[in-house]
Amino acid sequence: MSIIEPNSLLSVPTGQLRILELPHTTEGADGESVYFSLVIPTYKEAANITKIVEILCSLLDEALNRDYELIVVDDDSPDGTWEVAHSLSQQYPQLRVMRRQNERGLSSAVIRGWQVARGQILGVIDGDLQHPPDVLLRLLHSIEQGADLAVASRHLEDGGVSRWNFIRRFLSRGAQVLGLIILPGVLGRVSDPMSGYFLLRRSAIVGATLNPVGYKILLEVIGRGNIGQIAEVGYVFCERREGESKVTWKQYVDYIHHLILLRRSTGKFKKIHFPIGRFLRFGLVGLSGVFVDMAVLYLLHDPTTLSLPLTRSKIISGEVAIINNFFWNDIWTFADVAMQQREWRQRLKRFLKFNIICLAGLVLNVLILNLVYNFVIHNAYIANLIAIAVATIWNFWVNLKLSWRVTQVK
Image 1 (cartoon, one colour):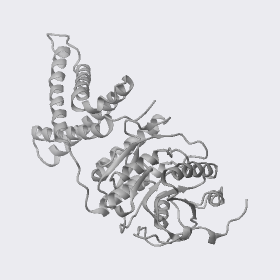
Image 2 (cartoon, one colour):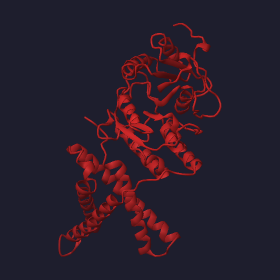
Image 3 (cartoon, one colour):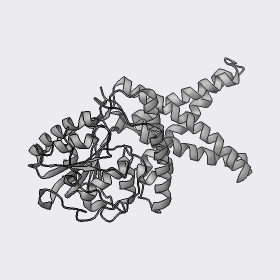
Image 4 (tube, rainbow, N blue to C red):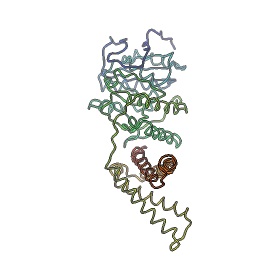
């Protein structure tokens, strides 16, 4: 493999991670602006880069008549990903390559790519073929229809994941719930805040100083950008074909650090749309569950009926109440979503999530009850009402965001 001279590559911007109205540099292609700039951050993707460039160029040549550019930003991969990419530039004139030797990290790589980009529409896609390239056309259409940000989501009806194990699903969902608690004004605006596949208008982040941590650049864009309308497009997250996964425990730690940093530094949050009507229906269903719980407990435990032990009776009556609540929420509170997810496996998945969330709500209820009673109001009944209110809002919000949504396709 021939050695590429450094001066034939894009210069790496320095200084603050800020997007300007005009590109930081105008190297290549006469410095003329283009409609769309797509950044492909890479590290050790030599086995995949040729294929993804070939697919993207074929797709975008036809859709945009070459009014676009691909920018590969490589973190000096030891497998020579940047060299492989640069060797393709003669065949694909829309391709530009940047080799970073003094910086690391996916998020900063994306922003450095956007800084040299010449497009009015900016985007990012993984270089490992786990993001289906054909979804780009639907994202572009959403931008053309007026969206400031178009996100590819795994959590819409036609989205999902291919073969994630239980642990990875649990960690992904747990990270999302944690984000909703720490930063609801950002994560509450999209169904898949962990997505790394999206497009946005350059004007939506011009002038904003970005300070990302880890992999989740979308959080930074929503939190610090001037994002108005958001559109979402479903996609199936594919299995990696070549190379190795970059997901480690460090990424989850960085994610939590990023949430806290963003919460502390932004100072203001976008308005959250809280569906009052749906919440009232959820509350009425919960009230019906109280009566079901009491009735079943009486039938099981009362000396005049079955006279079962109290603990066993309570466990059974509580689960019957949960089944009752799930049934009515599925056909009434979230009927519009459930009608799109009619398969028994989808319904079973929603039921299992609902059970887990209700269990977490019970733990939260007990915790709040003790905190309020011991440190705020020394009245068990008032403390219990406060605990019930907090747990009800928890159950509703988390079920709204996690339970009544498609997360896997056939």
